[in-house]
Every structure is written in structure tokens, then in C-alpha cells.
Image (cartoon, rainbow, N blue to C red):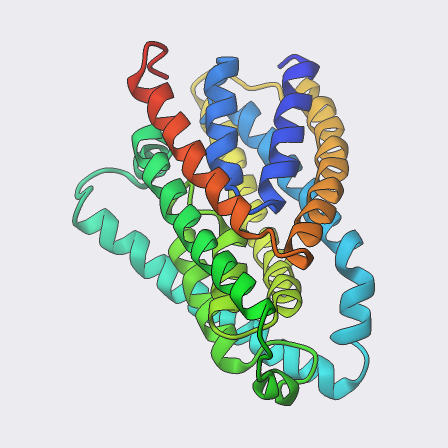
Length: 301
């Protein structure tokens, strides 16, 4: 794979993964425009490395905040750990249940890999983008109203430096709904849900990305296992796959994804603090229209 294509994907992934605009939707479109096969083992390796790069960007950006709020005392760490476990448990249960329901109803009889590829179809990505955009827009507009009036944050104060158990539960549940659908922005949906549940935008953002760090390693591991399986199958059929050349490009891509991720996080925090969160919702709605045009228009991706 040419290095310039990897760099383009890394920048798209790094920006879109951490901004509330759905990285999967943008990466799917970018892959199609570049003529790449997202199901190929080489592409799987590249995406695994890009996800790893953005995860380290999150850790680097939020480490000081987490250290000050989550690791200040043993009690603070215990509070946030309980909430992360609770939210992640809900994410796993709801996400897995939703995948099973889809497999056994709408796509009954189709292999799982085929269903995963189906979710990358642009006519399905577009409505997911629109749904995320509406959620972000509602949360952002309500936040603007809230900024103009005094708010009772007594529940937040009782929770210490993190979200409440109720807020964590809602965030985890909505994160589970995001998992199967490409285009439904994880960060956009979880931060917006936290804000709608009454959490301050800073706490919703901090907690959302703490969940992302917890969620990323299992996702990377799953993709790594899929890559190993594809490599073994190819070797058994006499068509071995050489991933060494791709690995060098993928490592470079991880670096660019890390740098783009830091830029994205600074941008996101700035817009949250200045009450411009709703603008991401407008962008998602416009992006949904563009995706529909790309699919049904003259290019027909």
C-alpha cells in the first residue's frame, strides 16, 4: 500500500476518531475514494495500528486531567473504577445483544463477517450519521441554554470528580448502541448522552474518553485475531500474505494518527468549552447528506 494513502487514512482516522463525527463513516468513504479494500488483511493491519495511535493520543492528552481527578485519592479512583466497570458492562451486554438480534432477524443466515461488511454500506452509514448528528445537536443546543442559567450540580458534587452512577449507566448503554453501527459516533453519542443526563460537559468528555481507552484494546485484539486467522487461511490455501512491508507503513500511520488525534482533542475541548458543541451535530447532518449523494449520485461509491 502506498505510504501517501496510509498517511491520508491516518489523518482522517486521527481527526474523525476523536471528534464526534464518526471515524468509521469517514474512513469507509476515504477507503472507497482511494480504491482500497477494507476487508483485506493489509487494511486490517493498518487500521489496527491507527486505532492504537489514537488511543495513545487520548492517554497523552487526558493524562494530567485523569491524574488530577481520577487518581487524586484512593477513594476517587475507586469511584471512577466502579463507574467505568458499570458502563463497560452495559456496553458489552447491549452491544452484543444488539449484534445477535440483527444476526438472527434482519440478516438471518448471513455469516458474521458479511454482516460487519454490510454495516459499511453507505446507505446505512448515512442514517447513522444523521442520528448521531441529531443527538449532538439537541445536547449542544440545550447546553447553550444551560450556560445562560444557573444549574444545580449537587449530584455531580456527590459523585466527586466523575459522573454519577446513573450518568455512567446511560453513557455505557448508548455506547453499546453505537458499537454495531458505522456512522453512529461513539464520542459524540456518549458525551452528548452524559450532558443530557445532567453531567457537566467536562466530566462527560473526560469519562467518555476514559471508556474509549478501556474499549480500544479489546477492539484492537479482535482485529488482530481476525488478521492472524486471515493470514493462516491464506497460507493454507497456498497464497501467503506478506505483511512486513505493510507493517512499516502502518507504524508510520500510527504516528500520524497520534498527532492528528492530539489536534482533534484540542479542537473538541475548545468547542465544548465555548458552547459550540452543536456545530458538530450540524456537520454530521451535512455529512450524512454527502454520503447519500456519494452512494446514489453519479459516482455511486
